[in-house]
Length: 230
Image (cartoon, rainbow, N blue to C red; front, side, top):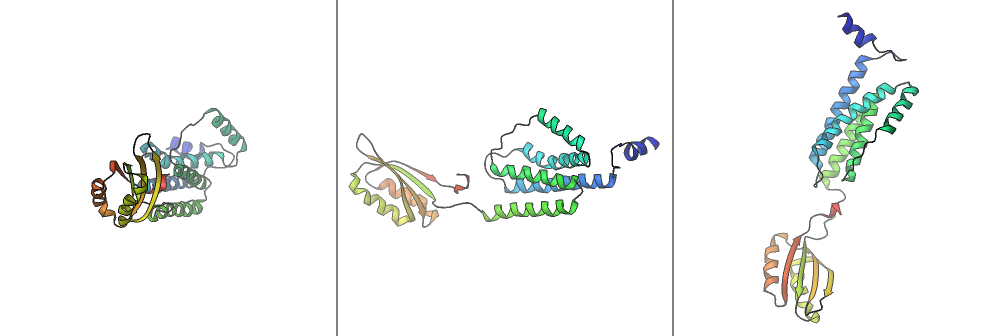
């Protein structure tokens, strides 16, 4: 069809001729690599900040950036024009997870690589980034597991007899840390301990022994998760 042929092959009046196969390859590669990055995000994400729209943006961002880089190729006037447009249109989005910023940057770089037709660099770089993110998630890199349980209670016996409580806790713990100790105006001392259990499965047994110990009241326990979010 003459109209189809003109529109797709001779309808672009840029300084450099449009390479349709290279353009389509760049868009398809950026779409595929964006999908891989989004799948890695879905697999490795933890916490409460998961957003479906953010996952979709990881897929779409490389496509947009790839097209932008194609439009800006060898045209400094268009580049300055795009800067003016971005100065007018402001994108405001607060990323709750600092790692989300890395995903955004990775999506942009992948799009830049595909848009500038550096396909090998984009593919190899995207795969290496995806592998690095999966590795960090799989090995739990950066997480710290220093205790299993937080015990809060009111000690109504004299402070000098806290050794009885500590002796009970030490029987069940590999490491015991007094997190806080605060005396009340009335009789009693509020104490809080962090405990790394010898056997985490024996937490109910420890709780029962604490309830039966004389001087323990207002007992509460909290299982401590890994401190990667702290």
